[in-house]
Image (cartoon, rainbow, N blue to C red; front, top):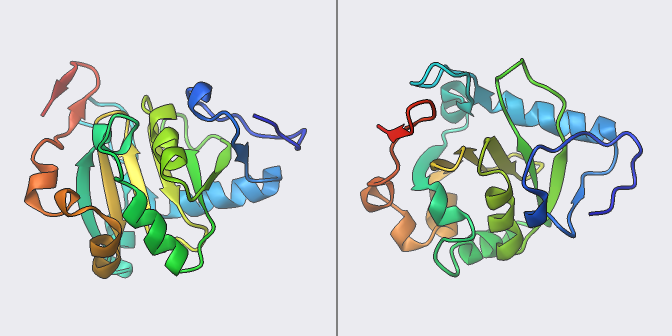
Length: 193
């Protein structure tokens, strides 16, 4: 990982999955994108009593977004082959060249964290989720036309306009079958609820 900025922000993650990737250039640009990410989120208390983040009900409603829940396993490196190919194709058709990914936690406020520039490559997208599997994290294009918010290594909320989700998700990732195993994780007890 090479960084050009002497003022780069920390990026709490498993860096072996981020080799060859860079942060968005410039501390100010990263902070602005991080703030854009938090505008899409709210900070509830998890069932275990810990602070967390999730996509904001207000944001979802204002933008008429739909949400498809998936297991984190399905979007990390262990998921099915080709899982992000429809997403990459849908984004390319819209002229999007990269995604922004960052750690988003409500613990200790909203600390400054790195925003990664993720190329539109299926292996790089799944690598981002694998690298951040122990935290709350979000991936989104700069225009915020959709987002994937993940809660540690348990669940991911894939959100955006309904037509986009249908275009960008594999058929097996759509509807009730996809969320059958996507429960809420209670991080203190180690139990899914």
